[in-house]
Length: 217
Image (cartoon, rainbow, N blue to C red; front, side):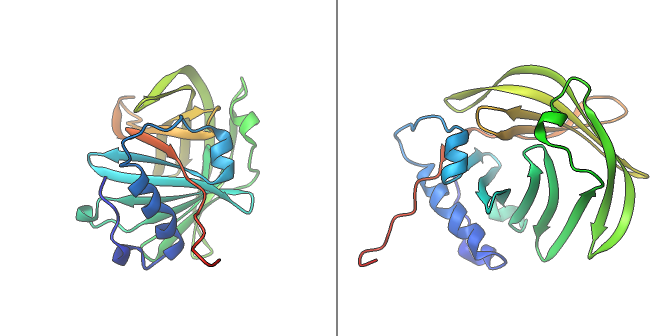
């Protein structure tokens, strides 16, 4: 995997400190044990893709799930940070000096989203503390399955996420691995045809190692 140059991470040195060591570790020849929720809660988990190059590192900060994404530098995309209300709901996205927020009138827990009845509620798109659009978000379980990332295979719950805010719409299939506590693949769906039109998937997953202390500390 291509390690993100430090110059692309000036916007958030913490993101680089988290991603770069993990990207290096992903090149190790020995296959580590498949990460679990315990690894996510302890030091974090990173998923990578070789083509096109991409890495997303997840961890909990003060009890809140966050992720840091770095794409192939050749794509000229700035690193991105996302904050989650729970593993299925992104509430804030930051990158390249810009940010936006999805504010839910009532944010559901993961159990509600995975319930038999699904969940629907009000949501607003907020940019620079200004509401730009409002509408509804719906989540519904549509199936169960298995999904492999490299040598690791996880049981997944397939959840449809549909957000309607006037002309702004989003239709995404999220595959959530309870054992890991993360969505491990997302597929963008064309609302008219129901066919996939884009996907974020991975071919390697590793747990983050504890930070090594420097000599003399």
